[in-house]
Image (cartoon, rainbow, N blue to C red):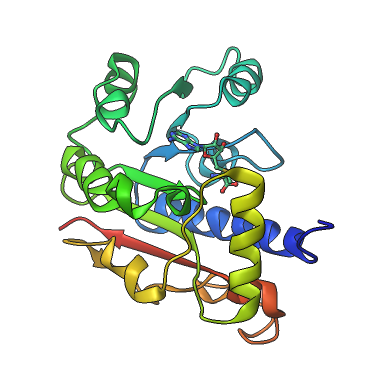
Length: 228
Ligand SMILES: C[S@@+](CC[C@H](N)C(=O)[O-])C[C@H]1O[C@@H](n2cnc3c(N)ncnc32)[C@H](O)[C@@H]1O
């Protein structure tokens, strides 16, 4: 927060759009199973809690490569039979789609919502983001959905500053332009409103109009697409 004033506004917006996507998928699109890759530490209003409110039968699999995340998620989910947290590495998609526990927990004949919220900007071009996402999408049945939240190279100094400060703190990060993020949805059909700045993705009624959110919220985009 000291290095990037206002970052908490962006992080809250990230969690909020994830919630709106989950409510859309489970409540409107009828998707009853979610695969959340790079799920992060459990927090208030987790994906499985939001999904269950929309459909008590919804199933959620959380995947992360951080053992601390897994320890907390496993503790939180003790005794929960419809939600699973497993270790998996985005850089090895088969470690996710071929994991026997993941295969058993989800019905791979029914649509799955693949959530990649705040993770793809840690995949450098040299890591092959198209190939990684393509391998995950190939494993999903037709009618599945893919959500990406991604930090933006907007060409503006605030975006360059945030990227530089994250690169210093985290070692790796790749902000992309809207066009570069849109290209990651190759072969998929973007759901309206398409790929947009985070606050503009199906805002809740009463939310401030896009443009009134302050500069931090112009630094990330969100899009949801359907696999034909
Ligand atoms: C910024 S957090 C996002 C958390 C959550 N999705 C959200 O939007 O609030 C990114 C998460 O991705 C995980 N992650 C980073 N690289 C990963 C990889 N290669 N495979 C799986 N998870 C990874 C990190 O451990 C972290 O929990």
